[in-house]
Image (cartoon, rainbow, N blue to C red; front, side):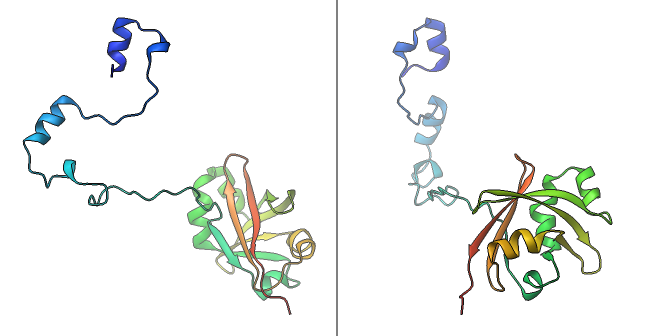
Length: 179
């Protein structure tokens, strides 16, 4: 197989370029590995190597914040409470300093929340609630989510911040058994 530099030097057309993917060792690496014992990493199968994963992950769950709704989340308190460590780990690192300051202010910040299940967009205030050392979604949580979606205590929801669209994504992950 001709490497890139040789192809350019000989000015081949793209018709002569192979689309076959192969793994090659450099001549120097091949010469060095030939002189080492067969127990070196170069000669171990993928199953024997401990530094190579052979696991294929086709899907990574985007909903890093998962919450089993409590009675206070679905009662007349009109707010969704999130643990401070989840917000610090999965949301704040993706925001600007200005946005963080606004969220941590008395009034909080207006944020958009995309409901994946119903494909609808909602606006709420998101703020740090200093009295409980947590973060909350307030204003229309009850109307836009609890009542509209029929959320109940024990339902599991998922949230994540989407940096690309600058909004939260929401999904009901599991419904609690209904009596």
